[in-house]
Image 1 (cartoon, helix red, strand yellow):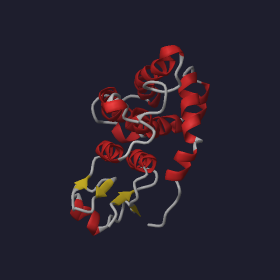
Image 2: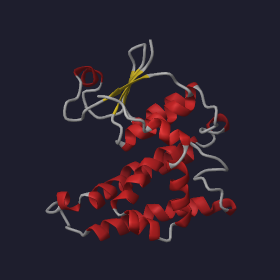
Image 3: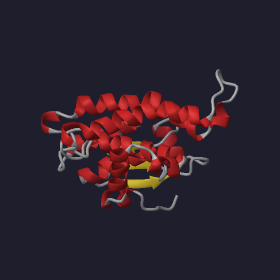
Length: 209
């Protein structure tokens, strides 16, 4: 039996899980989900009803995307995404916490400011973009560290790059022209390189529901 991954192609959390499963060489069954008609088997495995959900052959369920990434890489890490003896894990986890916490909250408001009107302070889309730029600048600075390594940690792609990329992709897509003309040059290059990679193309293939 193979692990089963319940996924939704455009979900950034599911993207990061697929990236790690793919690079680790883990064989699995992908079940593309229609979010408006979630399968009963997925809801039984994980009642919270969000993707991704990984069901292992022994019945264990992993339903947090970052946990799926770490599990996959702990099985096999041919590209050294975790670093020697997990060297990159602490730094990656700290960045992912910022991404999944305050940045994701700002990203949601930047994408859909009208949905949040009346919920406390009402702000414009440009306000939320400015808030999100705090994290963009953090990433830009990291990409410039060590003489410009082109990666968030160390001298090669790591867990951090794969975990954060799908969310920066979403942020950029809200106003692609603004992002392309912004001063985040290293972040633009990082995004373009990864989004045009064979790895990203592989995990973004379309599958029938």
